[in-house]
Image (cartoon, rainbow, N blue to C red; front, side, top):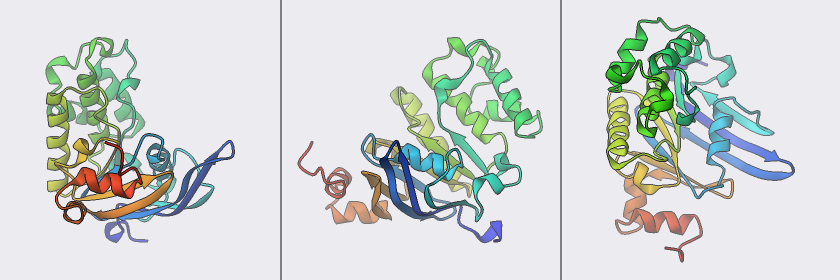
Length: 243
């Protein structure tokens, strides 16, 4: 399959169980290039498991997950295709932000010169040589985004990226992701918070109890619920009586 003409992400009939309990039950959706897609759902709905399946971090029991037409494991130099932000708190506290990025660049076979470039892109040049143990969560998040950008990927995948961020950090993240998509990139942003996606998303995929219950444009979702995205979300997830 031609990577240049394949959708950035395609999932079909994904199933995954842990210890006999189904976490993902037939999930399927396709993401088009140049879009910001919000992957929404309550805590425990299966969002993180779906992302791990898409990125080849765990194997599906059934179904397929394709990144630019191929399983993630079959991508050549995957860092140049996909950047992922899964755990901003996972930095080694004794390493500086710059050291973390240099290690990530070497592992991804990316030119070391990219480290300074991405530090500037995320506004961390001045703090790059501080140990990450002294970083705020927002600073750690910026380093995580910088690591995802090292390979100049065409796709960014982020799982609950705003956890612990203050309003300024959330605004920075939204602006950065929107700019990435406006420049031709594609973004999959997983969250249980509508506020994370409503200002930047083009489309939303909603998961509840391991199943896709909605796959629509944000505009259509809002129009369906008379301008109320929260009302639409609560309706499709089956918790319309909870506010």
